[in-house]
Amino acid sequence: MAVVFRASKHDLVKAISVNLSEVEKRMSDKFVAVLMGSDSDLPQMQPAIDTLAKFDINTEVKVTSAHRTPAATQAYVTDADQRGCQVFIAAAGMAAHLAGAVAANTTKPVIGVPINASLEGLDALLSTVQMPGGIPVATVAIGKAGAKNAAYLAAQIMSTADPELAVRVRNEREESAQAVQAKDAALQAKLAGG
Ligand code: AIR
Image (cartoon, rainbow, N blue to C red; front, side):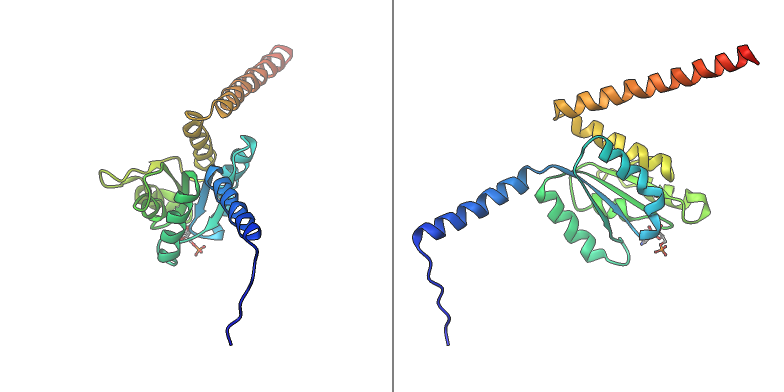
């Protein structure tokens, strides 16, 4: 038996315009995707998530593996690219091919974070940084320091097209310099008093 839904023309127009505005909203939502090969990478990647939050940047965080879930990784990158992802941050340890696999499926900037899961992260560093010409991965330092810098770099990339974010990035750099100067002042006072 066929089931027929009846709706007035007004209802249909309303439904379509609600859907369209939802699509438009989704299209204008810029964000950074933070991908990691395993949930075991999260402790080293937390500084990236925290730093993006500090800059008030929309972020999606996802565990996806170049080797264990290759099709899902590709599907996510393609979808995120179309939904407004501006920068991909991809972290993995060991034979760390996630950033390269992401870069193979998008022309958005990809930042790779080598995770220290074995060999002090040197295996992941080389796996991430040694990309063939034409498919770049901007590779940062191993572990937490790299995770933090990946977020700063993503913010700086996005700030080239976002003047308000550019102000936040510049202000944060200034605050960071002032914090160093305050530490130096405290050290000098301690040395003079010692
Ligand atoms: N990994 C996961 N899929 C492919 C790779 N290279 C990495 C993860 C993690 C390491 O393998 O990014 O750093 C170990 O993962 P697990 O899940 O065994 O702890």
